[in-house]
Each structure stands twice: as C-alpha cells, then as structure tokens.
Length: 88
Image 1 (cartoon, rainbow, N blue to C red):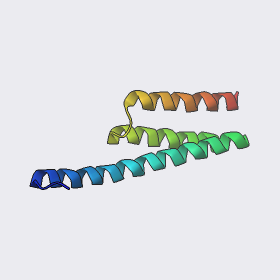
Image 2 (image 1 turned 90 degrees about the horizontal axis):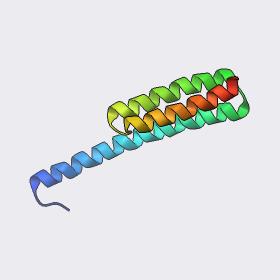
Image 3 (image 1 turned 30 degrees about the vertical axis):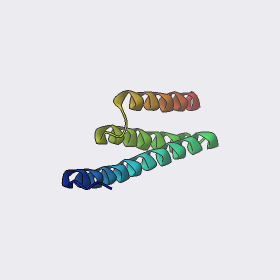
C-alpha cells in the first residue's frame, strides 16, 4: 500500500474510476446481449429498439472514456449490419 498522501489519493481515485468503468461496460454488454437475443428470435421490432439502446450505451461509453471512438464505431457498424440482414 502507498505511504505517500498523493499516492493514496491516486489509489482511491483509480478504484472509483475502475468501478464506474466496470458499471458502464456491464451495461453495454447487457444491451448488446439483448440485441443479439432479439435477433436470434427474429423479432424485428424488439431488435430495432435494442439496437437503439445499444448504440446509445456505446456512445455513452465513449463520452465516459471507457471505449475508444473507433472501437465504438466498429461495434455500432457490426450491430447495424446484423440488423440490416434481419430486416432485408
């Protein structure tokens, strides 16, 4: 454990941000799983709603600094491609 005051503060700050990042990632993964479930069931309306929510969560992860913007773009593109195959 750190002995210096600034290092102790930094460790506490790192723990807080780690927990926040974990929460954001968990919510993101859950929304993507819901989208995948709607696609496998073939429910177009539910898939479109889940896609909207998943892209919102991805964008929120970017603004929080959890995901890189290119990673987010790749994930959204993949989800959109899957949705387009379902609706076509």
